[in-house]
Length: 225
Image 1 (cartoon, one colour):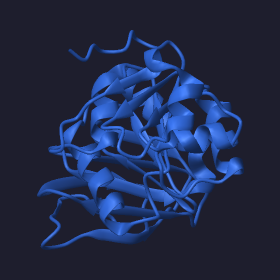
Image 2 (cartoon, helix red, strand yellow):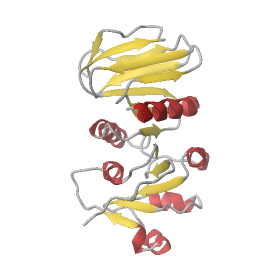
Image 3 (cartoon, one colour):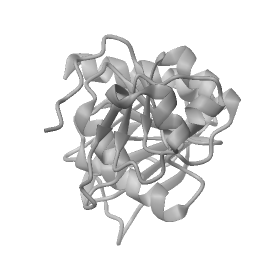
Image 4 (cartoon, helix red, strand yellow):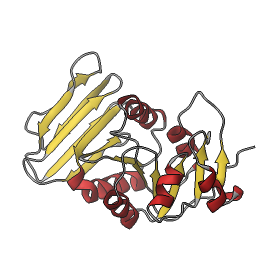
């Protein structure tokens, strides 16, 4: 039987097997020092000289070298093929914040599956970190400080109605859906942006350079929920 991890008091970097650079991993670990790997992310971690606390997944991408280096006690094998390793890992992790690295960019289907997981687990405080963008689910009202003229995109994965301030093209009262109106290519008028929806399903996409601002906003929103 798979048991949940004990609650982790520090932020977690959850490492997948996608596109990752040493610089990106170092950036995430500075902000989320407890490292957990999803399946093949274990080999990436070891290749970068990092040792994950645990590895979660169906283990179809983990090398024998990684298994030997980390020991059987580090592996939480979940053979269920109906869920992704990212989804399984989030189900087992309880932490103040989770930075998901290596889940965007390498394969489009894997990226879309990661977005699906964000919506399926709305209570998890997760930020996906890519090479140029970061993505998170707007599961709580968001209040964030960003520089004027910053890119700020809203992409609905379900039908929802939006309220916003601080954007060049206001979205207040707008109903969005993946098959109808979306909210990409918006711009911050600054300095504060507030956005909320009447239900789950909205993804926020901003440049990776604003990672610290997003971490602060997501953490604050989680604390008051």
